[in-house]
Amino acid sequence: MDKRERPIYKGIFFSEQEWQQVATKMAESDMPNFSAFCREMLLTGKVKHYDFSVIKEISSNLSHISGNINHVAKRCNTNQSVTTNDVEQLRREYLQLKSLYQERLVKALRKLV
Image 1: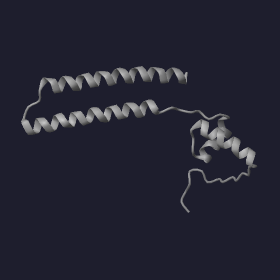
Image 2 (image 1 turned 90 degrees about the horizontal axis):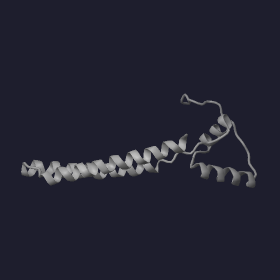
Image 3 (image 1 turned 135 degrees about the horizontal axis):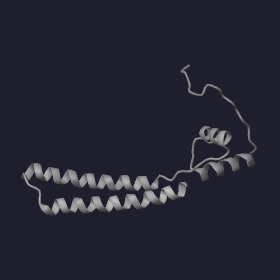
């Protein structure tokens, strides 16, 4: 058997009603792993929910910009030139993303405090 980080196992039984309450709280916490949910509840008495949708959105925007950068790089390698318009478009997209990131990050940090 592999060396586990948490070698002590404890089983637990629920009634249907109790399990429905636990399942509801797990869904509200957005924590799908029962073991992690129980451990957090037992050790701290609460489960903190972190919303990563902002990070996912920013990551998606970064992917879009990186695709544009790759497109410009391919054009540069093929034509041996990049237009000022190409560079300016990338700069605008970067500044928009930076502004969005800062705005969303500030909002997310205010929620944590």
